Amino acid sequence: MRIELASAPGSPERPNEDWVCGALPASGQGGVLVLLDGVTPPAGDDGCVHSVPWFTARLGGALVELSGSRPDLTLTEVLAEAISRTADAHRVTCELSHARTPQATVVLARWGAETVEHLVLSDSALLVEAYDGTVRAVLDDRLDRLPPGSLASNEIADATVRNKEGGFFTAAADPSVASRAVTGSTPVSGVRALAALSDGATRWTEVFGEGDWADALGLLRKAGPRGLIDRVRELESADAASGRVRLRRAKTHDDATALLVELG
Image 1 (cartoon, one colour):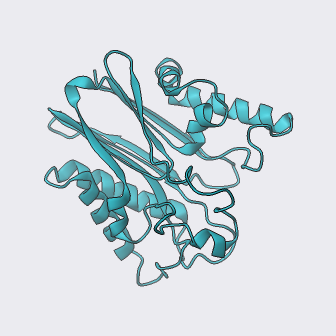
Image 2 (cartoon, rainbow, N blue to C red; image 1 turned 90 degrees about the vertical axis):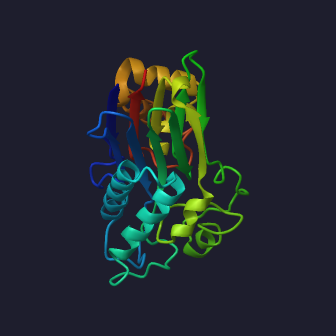
């Protein structure tokens, strides 16, 4: 088994709000991967005295511990408990009902002797490669299905779709959101590799169209997670210099994280 990962901030002036971990238990059987993409709040009050990296570090640590030590819990239950633990860590000092309280997208996978379980919440991606080379992308596409103009930097507009029915969902302070995640399982005998990508890394496929998901996983295997991120940075810079044809109004560089697990 081989695990490789890399993460890079979108700007040297801002902390990286992504969080990633690949863990193998002491027993030597199975493992866990966790990738979180922290949601950058707009300038102004978000009701919390803590930073987004503070939140993703605590949520990520809870997800690793629970998914590794509690095989009796489903991944949905793991996420719900991790959200509850993290909320308890700052509910006394912070207004957790605020629409922009610290939050994150989630990719979570756990594998054992027989099964690979997965969970995806919001717009990070999990790639599952079979032994025949077929790659399946596990995606939560609620953001893509929102009507044009639903998302805005305006707090009121954003609050109408964030963690609301008919909108999209992220891991914030409400553990019930775990039930909204995309979940499933695959026999471990049919999985050669797994890859987790934050949306800063999925730009290689989703924004710049350099290849499909199988091509993205192939690049990860050949160049490593750092190589994929470096290529995204080159594409972002070139597009920004040529009139932002692909990026348009999006930030030039986003936090980008990639993790590759070779099971077979």
